Amino acid sequence: MAEIAVVTGASSGIGAATARHLVRAGFDVVIGARRVERLEDLKRQLEAEYPERIVTALPLDVSDVDSVKAFTDAIEKVDVLVNNAGGALGVDRIETADEADWSRMYDINVLSILRVTQALLPKLRASPAASVVTIGSVAALEAYETGAGYNAAKHGARAVTRVLRLELKGEPIRVIEIDPGLVETEFSVVRLGGDQAAADKIYEGVDNLTADDIADAVTWTVTRPPHVNIDSIQIMPRDQVAARNVYRRNV
Image 1 (tube, helix red, strand yellow):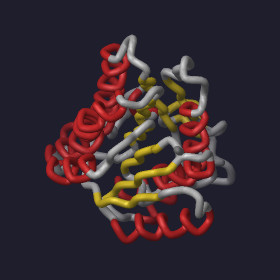
Image 2 (cartoon, rainbow, N blue to C red):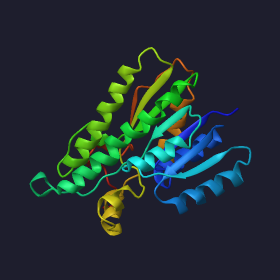
Image 3 (cartoon, rainbow, N blue to C red):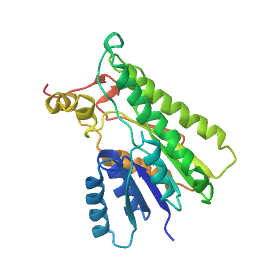
């Protein structure tokens, strides 16, 4: 029987790419996200390409307790959990920040890890060799101007992940954190309220990471021998040397 991987925020970007890579590596997958139509499209694509694999698509809003319960109750077995759901809202300075945006970022980046991991932990414990992966950010490692809300949320996600690693000492469950830099996905469009032109400027002139780059790293970490725990990986484009220190060509 194939191992089962659960991926949150799987309707696009890193989540969707991670599901593809894990299926390719031989996992059956359970994918969850709010945008159910996109999930169903991904499910059809994966099933067409890998008919031997089982792909289950379930609605999931990680900020809604009832949605998380329905999602996790529907999962009978899990060997790998990828806590990918998250995101940033706004680029305001602290003096003009919207508290509602900060609350929302804390909810989807930190409390989401608590809700999903807590609910699935008994099933992860039933696996002979389980893994929990947090998709973090360079924002968890260094602060930058106009990023305080997202910095705080991702620092929180990093803290939760580290504490989970400590609390599961001696159990056959790996805890892994992957912190990407610039990945060209819908992330910046969402952060900037749908402003595609402004989002494009962020990636302009840079040989950015792709969602597949991060998905490849996730798959590598969870396919190591069970005694090997890749505690954390920071992945940056060669052109990016710090959160806001980026080399741009012809710009």
